[in-house]
Length: 530
Ligand SMILES: Cc1cc2nc3c(=O)[nH]c(=O)nc-3n(C[C@H](O)[C@H](O)[C@H](O)COP(=O)(O)OP(=O)(O)OC[C@H]3O[C@@H](n4cnc5c(N)ncnc54)[C@H](O)[C@@H]3O)c2cc1C
Image (cartoon, rainbow, N blue to C red; front, side, top):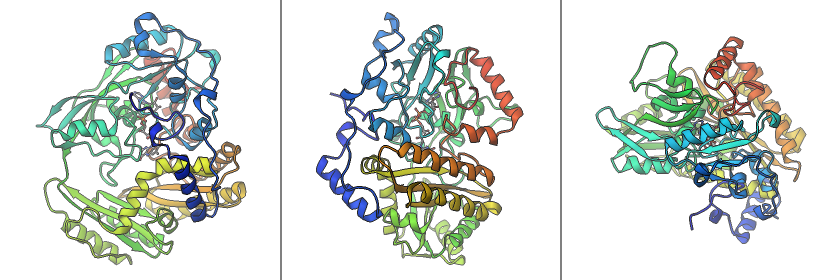
């Protein structure tokens, strides 16, 4: 039997820790954090969940690819934010889709879309379902639609064509990170877009949300890797030309990138691929002070060296992840290339770090693993999505928010956001921490990513996290940042996105939506509309 994903959390059902291991893990974490219970709660089994009767019946012609099975409906009801996991863990499914469709090719997708629209349903395009912003939850006015149809594109998962001359690949939207990399790997190529959700998120989802990946500089977002996009809209096919660049007006591919499922269902894209890296170097650099580390990163980001990895982690976060002892901030610095040695770039980058008080361990030449601290951080990074399920079970609130800001405003921005978020955590949870790292850096500013860990009131986590997120989001917008650097807008970030964007732009986007989706059926409530 095929492995099944957990309907409530991260990963497969068979990856859930056995009870004894879960208890040991909770006890260890509770001791390390100083809060949380060593006694875990357990998720409500699906057999005890009651979902409303489906309101729609798919036609016989689509029966083979449609499901109204409770598991499928529960699995597609939410993304994977902390709030999503908490609700699903507690057996609460607020807006399950009535029907889940899994088309196997573009024609089936077109047929499913036609049926859903003619049935008066709202349609939610669905990739890996790893949204952390309410992007796939049908939190919409029920009266307006006859029901909800979720179109899961994961069966469209193939690399269809390779262009080794231009180094591009035509890939279907439902391909998950590992599946897409495995197919490219057969040809010695890679996309090298590794968001933390890589294991389950899809190319179509990355494009729809403008995801941020592996590269800390230069190719930070999927935008930079997309050559052209193809989508099915209610008004026909929207496909942009394959071009290395173009100055022909507002870009039709750029308009689909970040459209979050409101304009069409992305079915495939040409993306820029590259040979796999052969030369790598990575090192951990310690700074006694986060501010000094930030100054070093600014200098690096403006040096023209463009490190592949340049993640500055504050002392508290380094400690939580086991990469430090709380006394220093850690810069995870890395270079890679398929064609040439990178040691020279690393030496220049370290010189720059040294100018700002950075210290590093001796590194092996061409070392891939880098320092021990870097290894610990990488381990923690990969483990984090699974760990969050354990946090929910043991009553630890775990939230994140991320943004970007220009360098000259960063110090005051960081201070104000950190103070506000920390005050909210203290007030709402009585204890806990707010830590920060840079995920991506630009010559004109960093993308800071904040992580909150605090004691949760079991059963009251949703109210707690909503209040904390609201305070943090208000602070980010008030201080001039963006409500999201790469997590997208979805339904959760709408209030702040509405403040951030110019009004004429909102009107223009509404016009575009009305032109391609006159019934407003595609992912209603995301980016614009009620
Ligand atoms: C643990 C964890 C770590 C994460 N790390 C990162 C990270 O490092 N970087 C990052 O950018 N994000 C990250 N995210 C957020 C999330 O993984 C990204 O937003 C990702 O791009 C979503 O891809 P998906 O395939 O899961 O899309 P889904 O969650 O299925 O959908 C997301 C949005 O895109 C739309 N959509 C999906 N597929 C299509 C399609 N084919 N056509 C049209 N619209 C579509 C949906 O309607 C929805 O609005 C993380 C999330 C989690 C839970």
